[in-house]
Amino acid sequence: MKTTLSGLTSLALAAAAALFAYPALSADKAPAKADPNASPIYGVTIPKGYRQWEFVAPALEKEPLNELRTVVGNKIAMDAYKKGKLPFPDGSILVKLAYKYTQSPDFESALVPDHATTVQVMVKDSRKYAASGGWGYGRFIDGKPVDAAQHQTCFACHAARVKDRDYVFTKLVP
Ligand code: HEC
Image (cartoon, rainbow, N blue to C red; front, side):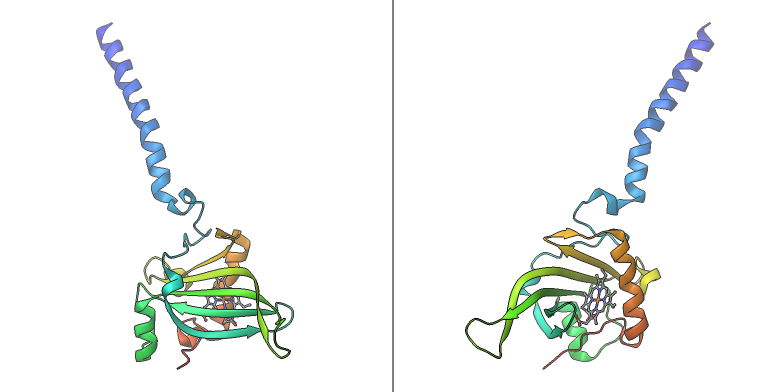
């Protein structure tokens, strides 16, 4: 009788241990899901302080998007740009801010920013993101990441066009 009881107790203990261990294990496996502000697939978030980062270049996107864009980079990315160093080292982050453009009410030939559309982020981590050329991608609208389907398009387009520049379109303008 005594043996059966202790057998049952250890069974119960093992079951309880399994119950406690399981959530820890699944959290380890899917850290991206834990943060609602992180992009699907890559787990990229909007980096703190990016509004203070250095300017890389602007871009004008014609029909159908009609957007003005500005790309900025953190110090690691800017140092690489200035030295013409490719590939970008781990820790490089590039952020693109996009706005619809609108006719300036003050000057005929000027197009000026209207409302913000997306903030897009590329983070270099050659090991973590080995499957996507070393870059993790994030697209955000009003601070929230867009769906997985949109994130599936990022690497394909960057890889098809600018693989030889480490998947980065924007060139530094002096
Ligand atoms: C159909 C092509 C295409 C797709 C898809 C695409 N991009 Fe880009 N991306 C561009 C182009 C072109 C630029 C250059 C700047 C511009 O014209 O806006 C760019 C620039 C960027 C930049 C600035 C660094 C650089 O490469 O110049 C970031 C960051 C970025 N994209 C993130 C993303 C993210 C995140 C996604 C997916 C959610 C994505 N991109 C999907 C074409 C694409």
